Image (cartoon, rainbow, N blue to C red):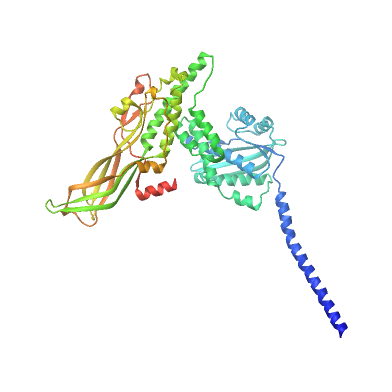
Length: 495
């Protein structure tokens, strides 16, 4: 009996050891695929020893204002190539690439020989070239990557995209994925997921940098400044450098001809900037916000009328974006103005007078940001009948900047959008003995019919002689936007 129990116990021990060993084996085996996957993930082919140049794509039949797409695609593809591969990527700022592009792209499109030559000039083993043609409302985009050694096309893409697909970043992600896959560049699952989504903040900055550069080339300086001011992240340094270059004024030459040419360029540039600034501010400086939510009435039986008061009312609010642009331009100009080296040409520049015309302001102040608007209101009864009308004036009194040189240069400071809103009071609306009791039917509502500025100044085109540049023609402007208080709060939250 003892032998039986001993034999039984021995069997149990052997079974237990066998089970434990099997569990360990299974546990070990379950980890093997994970280790292999991690190893494969670390050893993905990324084109480590390749050097690739990304040229700016060439455009056909594209509107001037849409030419920013070319630089945007170049910058985006360059950035994504660097992010998702280990290739050495030559970007737009590479001196060799700049020189090669200038010499070889005169015909508008790169031939196979041009591509090989560009590769040799930049020491690149691969060259990316592309073209974009607008056909109706569609953009046909073609890219190819050539191997310089064999002139073989290693990767290519030909597809059509809508403007919205380009603007929302979908197109560039699609182009990047296809071109890299053509080069046999491998992606991890995380990289595939990343490349299938758009980093809206980063993409917006790349676009605004391209839009600013394109506007600057077209001498639309104010649009360029607006675009550059929206750039954030890695592109912000280049945007700030572009702003400084656009508005900066430094030149040193012993040649009289060069100096005269430079002075003429500065006079033309700054007159153009101020023409554009004056027009831009008169169209974009002010928002109108209204709130007619509180209605009080008082019946006057003796006069068979009813008085109404609508509050808080209506007011002007400065547009912070416009004020930023104004401050950027004026601050740079005042530095130029107080630099004696610029006296020889800056006197030929007519400074801007933004806002509503005022003889006092135009005589005393260099820059007048006073805006006054005439608001046409209508009072309706429950049937939709207009039972009364009223015109009121509302105004915004901005900062004033003196001509007086003895005061020295005072930098223009920009406030937050919230501060601009809080600093101006609502103007209440009152109808006193103006509404007959006989017209009262149902609920009474107050509506804005129209809003126009008082007389604004606008300069004539660039002057033919010294005196014509001071001439102004009178125009009327609408505000940049009209908002109910609820619409305003939503607008501020979304911007």
